[in-house]
Image (cartoon, rainbow, N blue to C red; front, side, top):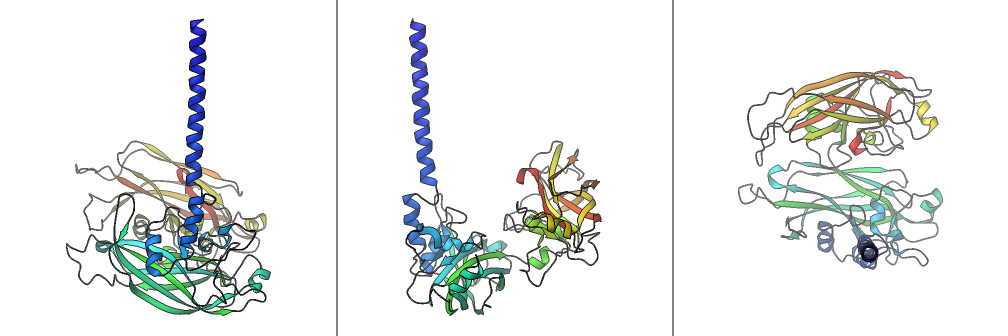
Length: 451
């Protein structure tokens, strides 16, 4: 009897523990959920109604959510019967042309602004930046909605900078905002993506780089102000479907000359996706954005996009590179690659473009040497392994394994000498011919851990 009572009590304790755990887990999930929680709706109202650039900067400096906290605005439209965040500022930075930020001011939206974080830099490591703005004008979900609502005709793009300090819970701005650069832009009345470039040649606030300034951190922010609009056929609200930013030279990343240049670019990544792949060429189609077939489209975990080489002929000899592995201490390992051949967005596109029949996969081993603060490493590069692979003519995922049995670079006895980066190079050798185009495509080329 005692044993039975004991077992019953243990069972009851277990049930209570599970109930308690479930309540705690549910409570934590609700607090973190975006959107829907009261906490987020309140924050949305603040992020969608900033009073000035300084307030916008402070909010972007401390973002919790990668997408929903990435953009703020001076107003946004609230429509009866729809969720409050239907036209929130972050809708212009969600990589979805079917959504849009819609300003919510009276009139045509002249003077309304939207702000986006460009990036963070350390003074000692700063080099001039090329900032690419991707804008999809109007409400681009359909031709009808595009024509019904206002679109931006003329705007002012301003880049701000300010110094900040890193904190344990949040970052704090230390200086007033300084205008780094600005320009007036004219936007064509089209729902196609438009690319605008601006330069950040220097950190304007830094007059001298010395021991007092070289470790300072700066954040750059962009402001787009509506100056003129194309009038909508029915509504006076001005819309922007996409307002994204990328720092870097897209042409350079898509036209590397050799392995050393590819390695240098891949080891100095700013953006997790866009900087994840480089290539010897990429296709530019006059009817599409410049980066529509960029190398990183083969490493974005999206089978509706693809890298398309841009060389003459059928792409034989063209190469794409990705970061494959980083290790602190060596032991024999296997790197698993996943590849989706061709342009797999549809059967028609798959058949229209070339696919890879045979390729050479090479793994390069890189030793960056010991870490030295504020000093750019000069890596040693050597081929570790390679093999010829035959790929099936299918849009299904194909797996390739490569073994790293030993390190090729000699150990010198320095601390951390076994730290290695591994870069993968895929070279096109033979292709399956497309029915319409001669460009060879890869929809996905990634390491399994990241796929």
